[in-house]
Length: 319
Image 1 (cartoon, one colour):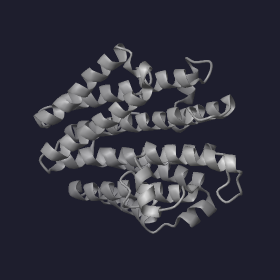
Image 2 (cartoon, rainbow, N blue to C red):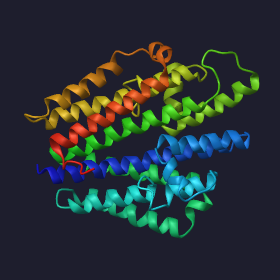
Image 3 (spheres, one colour):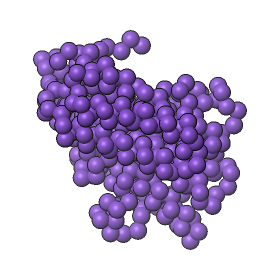
Image 4 (cartoon, rainbow, N blue to C red):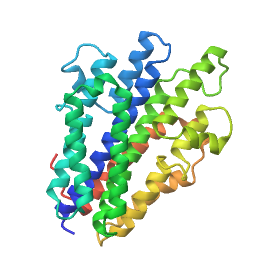
């Protein structure tokens, strides 16, 4: 396959997944903002969202204060923000258009219809009327895109590069979500908490689990009250949790194996080593050495893996 074609397919899927994950992060912040909390605590949550997306400096160039409304506008509608939902869906559609002949009709029409519909919804004010419903729509369109792709595309290199982009992006975003939510939460994993704190924590962790479609999965796996260390284990180490880091790396490794060439052995080794660290890791060891440090290192390694994939298979980055 031509590297330029592979590049468009890879990034089409990454941008679609990024739009979904941006919607998920915004949704969990929006839901937790409805809980009783001080203005200072709420601002920390919204600032954390910008920080983990590495968008705080860009946000501050055009906004003086961090408010829920302005952050959501910036992360949803601002076309100057390359990671906003509108920017991601536009980039996904443009990448799909560039390789329209490689895609099935259903796959192209799904991408194109998503782009047309999101513009209509934003212009008509549907986002402002019900942000939660808008975020659900973005997630649904991403689910639909993945389903149509798997259900209609030939199982060849085109599909493998699309899947590679999806799961590399998912690993990155899940790590960022876990990091910001654990890093900004003030409660101690093992410390005693008041009844009010425990009640707040339950709703806080429930919102985080729901943001990755993990609430029912947590109940099924652990059959217990929600505990932070188990939330971390579910989202990092459980291979049977679809949005976990382990599950995402399993997919990255398996799809890399399908497109391997003579020069990609080092890339495959790095992916396999990262997957092995998750496969044989223990949550108590990760927490004892520092969850934030672990996730920061994980994000660095995922970024390096993406750079190696670009070098071996795609159009090299010009930055």
